[in-house]
Image (cartoon, rainbow, N blue to C red; front, side, top):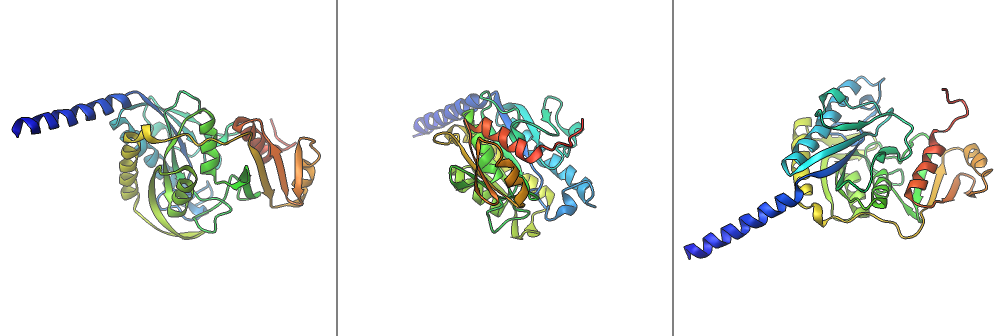
Amino acid sequence: MRTFLLYTFLFAFSLSAAAQSNREGLKIYISADMEGLTGAVTGEQLGPTGFEYARFRQIMTDEVNAVISAAREEGATEFLVSDSHGNGQNLLIEQLPDDVQIVRSWPRALGMMHGIDETFDGVIFVGYHSSTSNSEGVRAHTKSSANLTDLQLNGEHVSEGSWNAAIAGHFNVPVILVTGDDAAVAEVSAALGPIEGAVVKMNHGFHSATTMTPAAGQKLIREKTRAAIRRISEFKPFKLYGPPVVQFSLKHYQPAELLAYLKFVRRVDSHTIEYLADDMIDASKFMQFVLDYSVTINP
């Protein structure tokens, strides 16, 4: 009996060691937003004019660092972090580890996923929120709360999470974890399948939630990151079938009217534009142009 138990222990230990060995050297892409951070509920936490913005830049940085430290414990060695909120200059970059690289500011052809390629093993979304088509969620919107009322891919409403997952899927890289409020985590998980999710607050509406403390949120994020890295071989890339059909609705009439001057787009109705993209790279570039271009850009 003792011999059997010894062999069982050694076999289990060897499997664990093999699994850890297979995870050594993982390369992880982190896309970090702010609306889904622990404690964030209004614009007071989310932009330079908000009285709590400086504090939440720290919380954002702490949550990203929680992901990095936990992923390292499970064998990840390389990280690219995309500062993906607002002006793209939110993370306190001097507090990130010296070997981490950061994508900052705009414009970027791949938006919140700029720098992703086929060399990455997994993607983690930090501080994500639900979509503009979702009736629940703190600060729910998709890409632009000021300009868009809907965004669809191949006839399906998408959040920033599923849109960004499709960009990662173009490079055959899976999303393995999303952090945010309950509505955001549920929405991304419904689109992508059983990925890991860290729910750091329960939404009560657009500007209210019951939230964990930052320390508790970071502890949960570390736990879920470790679980995601351990399961990384189970996750599949989120891939579209066929060329992406991008459809979006604008709040205002005139931008749709002007976009309809372009022969490669179709005006579906007074506020809605449709574009047949070559792939998700083309789709991303088109949407970045739509939302960021102005003839008054200087320099």
